[in-house]
Image (cartoon, rainbow, N blue to C red; front, side, top):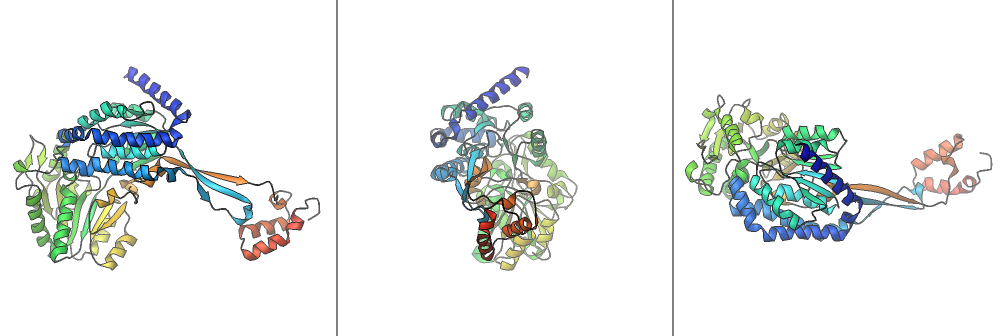
Amino acid sequence: MEGFEERLSHTLAGLKQVFRSRKTRGIDWRVAQLRGLLKFIAENEDGIFEALKEDLGKHSVEAYRDEIGIVKKSADHALLHIKKWMAPKKGQLPLLLFPSRAEVLPEPLGIVLIFGSWNFPISLTLDPLIGAISAGNTVVIKPSELAPACSSLLCRTIPYYLDSEAIKIIEGGCDVAEQLLQLQWDKIFFTGSPRVGRIVMSAAAKHLTPVTLELGGKCPVILDSYSGSDFKVAVKRIAGGKWGPCAGQACIGIDYVLVQHNFAPLLVESLKHCIKRFYGESVKSLQSICRIVNKFHFDRVRKLLEEPGVAASIFYGGSLDEENLMIEPTILLDPPLDAQIMTEEIFGPLLPIVTLDAIEESIDFINARPKPLAIYAFTKNKKLKDRILQETSSGSVTFNDAMIQFICDSLPFGGVGQSGFGRYHGKYSFDTFSHEKAVLHRSFFPELEPRYPPWNDFKLEFIRLAYNLDYIGLLLLLLGLRRLFMPNRSR
């Protein structure tokens, strides 16, 4: 490990030198890297499919939807807007400072460390990278060791497409991550669990390094009473939002559903129908669904089902295939609220349904728990929508759908409270990896004497007026200019 530390220090020194050379600040360099990423995606699509299949059992359709397509869309969006993002923005100044002008100048932070995530090992690694290079930073990427095939693919191929002097990929496990966190960075971007997020934040605090933490949380669905085709669409979207992305191993995936008592039987039966149609009828014949990433997480999810009182609440599914790390999509009806399945993020294909006397009770239920990364509410009730927006706190709220907010480059993506902090996607990614420098250009004339000692009552009144300047105040100020510009006269 001693030799690794030396190589790591040498790598960091090289990145500092590259950044200080200013080559990453030019638009040509940034555009070249974005185009390089697009070329990587285009020329390695089959390899990415294979790696995702090996690591997580992802079907190629799911892999393109949640991984390749996300990166391509994000890079295209950045290429389209990067020139505008880089341009200084005019700043508004108070009348008191006339004549002068101001601008807000975005500049890169410096050397950035990005920790990738195992559940979406391509998109959640390269999407933040797009923001970092768009902003003009040098970057170290640490892919997740829990997705070794994807990590290896990125490490082997990315240097052929991106500037290998400015963008480094370092593979390894927890020991490597710990070594990286000991170093001083200009920004750390982490996607993962709240437990590891605390470790990252603690290490960053030693160097006062800013961090973006994209964590998770128990994302609820509030399901109002529906009928007819609207209900069928809602159920499909709930099933897709729970079991579709990585078999529930997604930070913005649905964690549980809140519904009224009298509506629960219809919901359960409809979800069962969706499961059979989308994924199959037994754990041995499952298709179009990912496996659990490894034995550790398989055992963790299994223990959630083995807690006292939880097994009795299983309404559908619950079968496990340990050899293939597959867990059947499972519906639980009113599990014990103090069980781990209702107090910890599930990160697996288990869906608790919690029944309420009235759907309005869902607001108090959510507020009694840590703030989620997302709230999904299926309702046409405007009053309920307004209450959800005004009385709950979450990273995002999506009405009548699930998961789709992640692909919107025009919306910020990020958490609040225990679901993380900071944001990215589109322009928000550029801002996350930039510092907005305030620049003020001032004239030498006029020179207002009341800003300087010795103090007197007149100067106090002038300053009071200046801070409350309106049109009348401006008129009074202009009338007093002759006196102000004669500093030798007594006041």
